[in-house]
Image: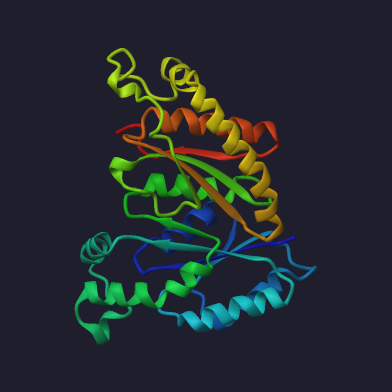
Length: 284
């Protein structure tokens, strides 16, 4: 079965870069595809004679959101499963990117100010964002991190249309992640940061891991989360959800959330899943 991915989102958020990453990974990629051609290309890619098993269609930010959603619905009416990757970034970062490249924003012709054009596009694309299978915020991602994030989402092997799960740790001090589905707060656990012996380590190191998981409340928490995910994951997959990101937060994102995220990921692997694991703030 052909794996079809539509890449869209805010102009300047990394659509063409994503297309390049996928092409390097062996995907058949069409960049800047007119929205009206999506159903036809999807039909051809899914035909029995097609040799394309992984197809990515990068759709420009200048497309009308209502039309894009209609064309995606038309693809699904053909019985073709399509996933939507939506890319976004903060207005400040997008302004910097456009000033660096000196390119014109597709909506700046009528609005004049670049920041106004970005905000207008953000508001216009909100329905597409809400309908997307996964949202990636590229604000703080460099080129290498962006590539790693995409590989984490799309996988690095043959076509696999099952749901892909990612477990993330983060620090509330650095802000709540915008591209996650479920968030759990680990700040109820004792903080290793206040122990001089443990502070230099992270939740990836045995001293901190043993301290965190050695708390009775920690294992009760992990057991409850594991039971919840055992219930939710099959239901999400039955509903056709393609990606699920589960996040665990603590104050700094280096100790408690890291240890808990690793333990939950291990539980998922024990049940046959293959979650990707990302520690957003462990190196801060």
